[in-house]
Length: 349
Image (cartoon, rainbow, N blue to C red; front, side):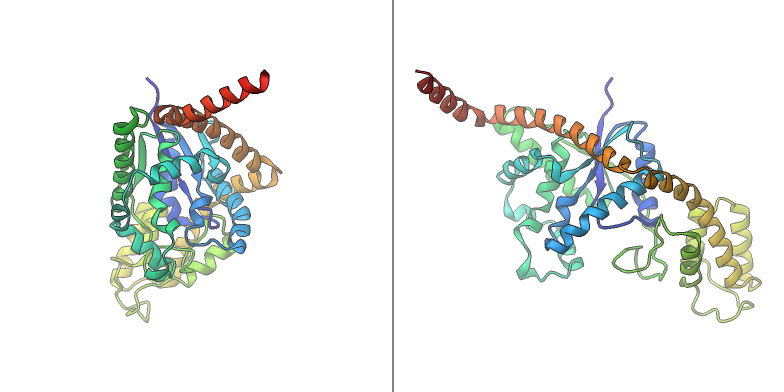
């Protein structure tokens, strides 16, 4: 039996951080052994909120940084297709066709649209057509390789339901071409930022990058938010919801050490300095193998580009097959074929 295909990926907005590892990458590394995985570098999606030439120029380096992090974490190009969204022409055509199969009311009713506009500091009256149509382009990404499953959190189920609606409507109009993708739901947690103000985010400046060196990690951990009521080491502190201990639980494999620190913290018999230094050691032990692998890939000139190039060619071949079947089902090729045949016949006389 053929493996089911999965489509997931990231917008190339820069280096990835610990929150990305917890929220998605760790899961992807496991999925690539069980499924036929396609990992998209979704550079077209960045245009919905950052369309300037300066933003586009920045994407070039961000693409490389994103893939370096993927590879360092264990994404294997021999097991999965890594491809650049904008370099696969078929996605533009699929996006155009799918736009005709969904209503504006359906799109504007998605709660994620307002959230995206708010996060990008876009006033409601200045929301672009591209931002409104963001979920349709996502649908094109998903249906182009005819993915069966899309890993998402429960808050993103609405986007996959939209893709299902579009696939269903296309098949009703023109015949069975597309599978109806399903959510591969996970209760993957988000990681709180170092400042304890929401989830870890580049824009919030509260993240530890997967590529940070040991000194950078130590500096960030020493500045982390902790129990504000604990002004001395002999004052009992709160462990629950404390970012230091949240990180210990996720990244420190020495569970007995973590429990000991928690007990002493609650009793007021350990200082923040020791708790943070122990976390520094745990994080650096976790990141050291990633750093070493990243350095190997980084120093192998052209390797990252070759991975993207070969993966994009593979996806282009898959996409062209889908596009050919889509056009044939719709009858779009008929008019041009007739025109071409009659024109050639006349020119040959």
